[in-house]
Length: 144
Image (cartoon, rainbow, N blue to C red; front, side):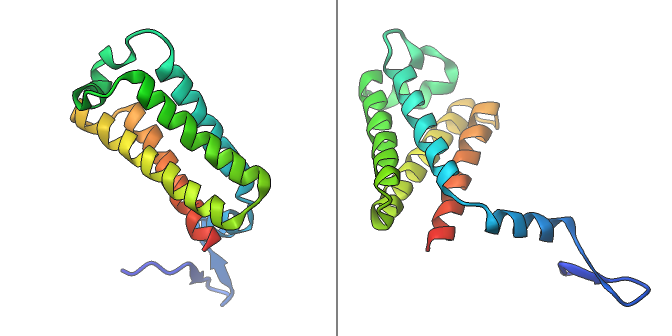
């Protein structure tokens, strides 16, 4: 049976589904706070990876270790992408916000895929970073 956002009640009035209300709320929310959060979390992830230590020794980061690139480089790329998104947001440049949002979304998507491949299953890391990727997609769709 196809999904219909509204259904008729016995009295003939329309009743909206919870999904319709959720979509209405999401369409009215401003995206700036979410963009700020995505940029800050990416910078924080980059700092955590770039700190001295062997972060990629964990089994969930095996795919990163297999690329042969040092942790410092991964951390710098993440910090640069997150900082670029925060800068574009601070200056409220629409085109720059879209470009940095796509870059951030691709980076979150790569992180998600790398962790999922390393674990060969869904974990809290891959689902969390997957949610970040979907959030970037949602903001991008809202801005188009």
